[in-house]
Amino acid sequence: MSGVRRAPGGSRIIERMPRSLTAKSGCWLTLLVLLLAGCVPLSPKRIQHADRIVAVSDDSWVDCARADRCAEPSPFMAQADAAIAASTPAQPHNTVTLLNIGQNALAARINLIRAAQRSIDIQTYIWARDDAGMLVLDELVKAARRGVKVRILADQLSSLNDPDLLSRLARASRNLTIKLYNPTFDAAHSNYVEYAASLLCCFNKFNQRMHNKLFLVDGKVGIVGGRNYQDAYFDWDPQMDFLDRDVIVAGPAGAQMAKSFRIFWHTKRAVPLTHLRDVNAEILRHPFDAEPWTEPVFADPQRVARMRARAEDPAWLQANLVSHSLNVGLVDYFYDLPSKAKAVHGPDSRELTRDLMTMIAGAQNQIVLQTPYLVLTRRAGRIFRKLQKKQPPVQVIVSTNSLATTDAMPVYALTYKHHKKFLVDYGFQIHELMPHPAAAAEMLGDYARLSGIGSETSSPHRGGRAPIEPGNPGPRISLHAKSLVVDDKIGMVGSHNFDPRSANYNTESGVIIPDPVFAGQLRAAILRDAAPRNAWLVAPRHPIPIIGDASQVIGDLSRQLPIFDIWPWAYSTDYQLKPGGTPVAANDPAFLDNWEPVGDFPEVNLSLTAIAARFVVAFGAGIQGIL
Image (cartoon, rainbow, N blue to C red; front, top):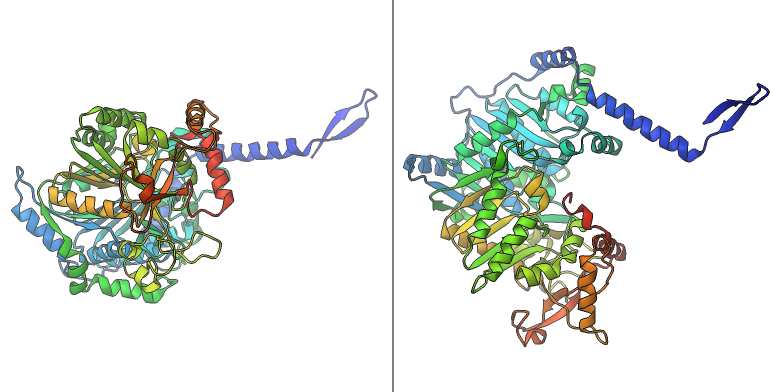
């Protein structure tokens, strides 16, 4: 780019501007254009035009004339009817079923979609265009076409961000309605430049996401937990599958879930498809020639067919799901309000966080906590310190990710940075998941058994696989479940990660169930994941030769610095149980006779990952709240 100035004699001199200045100017100009465009809403005329096109071109055909919308039988709907009939306002009854295996959770959803008679309401953070995401979408379209009212509310950041797909869905059925929550610049799809612009113009709004997960059928059967709609959450990803958890709740607790969904559905941040710039433009571009909704093309159609058959097989449902159901009393569904970031409704805006802190603070004997991201708020830290001052101290068992299993390396780096505080000040017993645990077949169900994953004879490593290396077969397992058990009496399953983002920014939801039998089921599932054959134990490092205890003093000083934490020898490291060893505690004199150190980042051979983690440990203290 060139600039022009006048010489003293009047002649023109053409100057070449620096390339860096040109690039910066172009970048800022792009951001400015995006900011100005994003601040100008779509005209009412364009929205009305798109609404008219949808109204006259959507599929109004209803396949079923029966009052029950041709619903198929479901054991979970039968559970709900029985629980509601037995309930009184003073003594509610609900039936709950833990969903620890992803494929079981997917089969339960398909079964319930086909059993719906009136309505299906879904909230989620992620909805992908892979087999699992498209399978559920296809089942929902079919339910809408037989007369069921289907509503989907998905956070825009990672969901259904294809304008062409959304244009088709807008016209797939008159009974199907979709909204995106908190869209960047009122568009379904946003590129990285637009994300950057949104951070500059409206960071507080952009940073608050809807992390709730709710699946509600006919207002009486709900699924609550941590799973999104993507292959990895249902054990279908060939590279990495999430170890996650949901719970089916059948009974009057569905009324609380319905109230929560209505609040989010009618908030201003829930934007209809015709109000989104790119979807609106796609509808106007193809008013009457949009491709109709048809059966998706699946990457693995045989797997999809098996799942659909399983979802309607009474014997399979009974053996794998219904036989584990529990009849309980009260089930409380807690949820943050959309105004959480502003807290305009006071403490009630952060309802779930408040009740989780109350649960933890009331512990008398033991807390069993499972979270993918062990980065606690200051409030939680104060509570755990008080629990350690009790006599005897409250035992706290934590199941979380290792660097080899996490999907968020910077967050793990901050966990690693604060291991000493967790172990010494909070008294945590930390168990970090192995990427290929011995119990993988239990965790992943049929997929692991068919693939031979997790066989203890498949590798000399007790995790069942060799360390992560380029070309190593998968999938590895990453922990995504968020659960809590207090004193073997009360259990929580939800979307809350127990971290600053879940506490202060994202809206979250979950169920709290004060039932000892349910708490026992949940506790057993978490302790299985934390068992020595499935997880490494984080414990104090054996003294370093020569410098010995001086290393710990230097490390303590390094961790207290506001930014830099560069001392390479942390207070703790990971340990693996020796063959035939007894899992004694870290303070037992025989600890090193039974456990062997495996390094700070076991089974991570990619040096770049380890280097990046060290970098975040050293320089990432200021981003803890954002992560």
